[in-house]
Image 1 (spheres, rainbow, N blue to C red):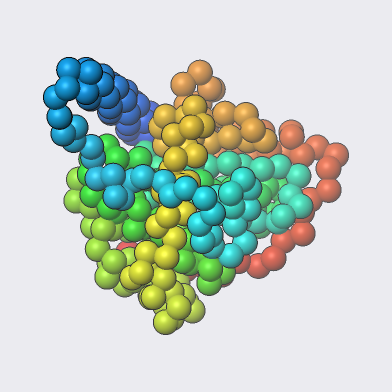
Image 2 (image 1 turned 60 degrees about the horizontal axis):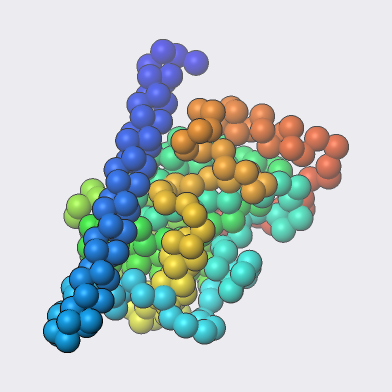
Length: 276
């Protein structure tokens, strides 16, 4: 491997680590503000005073109670998981991510080819949990709208290529271009067979918005506080306290976990057209 390529990978990992640290700090500040607002409200009520406590865009982040529509093939508790790869693969790679998250983008750019190879070889099933962390931290609705659009793509059997297209075209974190549904629909043109009436209606109507809110609520309750969070067979392999993860080390861990086990039966996955 060339020194230039090694430097690029080190830079990507540093970017991921720095972004995750920023997200954790934002989440901590947000929790502190939420607790503080609650205390103020309680004290005000006790004193017989009416106080309006501001909350951030609750209409877009509050989880719906009870069952909500879920995309075809979704699995797990409350059908909040989008699986990719062989259902009977011997190992499971769990990924919590946000389509607005720069650290997730850096992770995807470095690891996507390896993850695809492992999926296509029947070695892993990837289970995606989509969250709206950046919407909650910075405001906007790009995480929600992009997540809904990805769920709409899952309904059409094209989650993986559309997922990859979204990351290949991720805007700057502060710009929130994924809040524009026309942008999400235009990007769907890069995935053959995706841009049809059903997909367009699903994106425009926010069919899976409540599903996204419920998924984000489950993430909030998971004990994890940054994206991307990566687990292999339930063990956190990426982030604080973990050894530095590389595509090569991920492959080695999967191979070690799969030793002596039969590989999964793979169904061909549609691919996207050229990236930007």
